[in-house]
Length: 474
Image (tube, rainbow, N blue to C red):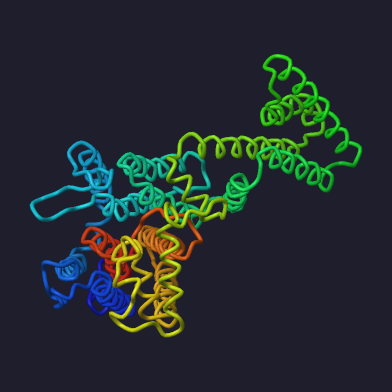
């Protein structure tokens, strides 16, 4: 049965007002960031602030169009839109314009479009379409493979441009899987992996391996069948470790302690297999898998950091972690960003009065580092207002997602929440030195047509779905 409703009456206008506030405040701060006295009019189309006005007007037209389209369109064409964007990502690698070493843009006359910005909403649509099918929950492994492929394919194509920041953002959609039933133990594992990742970069890997083994011994001692078994297992590990060390050193002349730890765990695990089988000690099997996975993860992080990441990417991470200090090189953006935000004080220096902004000390100040302009000219009050508005928007999206009657709309809402949350946290975090500088915009705020349009489509599709939540009753 279908029930006609007034779509405009069903729109959540609180979210629309917050969106308009972001767009307006962003436009004003773009004006301040790239202000040119010779082109002082904010409507000057030859300047970034004039062009942003065009993007804003176009975004509003896009938003209205999305609201007018039947909500079923987004369900039926989700996979088709996803495939179309994948093809555009392949095409941009072959025919796109290279900017700053990245082939991420299509240039059509004076208009430049970045397909990666439109990947976010189609990926969320595809995930929502898949999980809205009957019996499809991430609690089942067979139902987990396809959605991970949905996320991984565009992320891989974007990473090849290379645009690692946008690729990384897509993995935030894993949060949707947890909402839909993925085991919370995997969430805890993810947190532990993040801690282990940071520890691997800060501490010598041999110390990490030793800590992992000690932690495993303590866990087994507290949860096992007795101290005798626990100490026996530790003894087996030490004996096999000593043997592995002697053999490796004899063959290679090098201690290779990392490999000794891993080999000793594998060999002692095989020896322990009889105990696991006889006593049905699945907890020991899980513990061994956890220890082995932790060691392999540590080794992989260490290898990837030293052999896969480019030198400037390594330096950015080291600067954030305090391992290196490079205020005139890789750490220049971060250093100037902190100075800019800190100089604003409580109430800011005033509109168009920011010296860091005026003299262009912070690169990309109208795009990735737009938050610096807010901090310098509007101070703590201005940055707090932005953070509060984003927090309200995110909580409102969660509230709207939970009231949806269809799985498709609910899943899409959580996908929207995940992407906005990670964009906000990473963008603000990198301007104040909490995360490495990876170059992603602040949603609805930073300069750029592709970014603004992509986020507008992402948000207003959800508002359209929410407005029709009671239209189709089954």
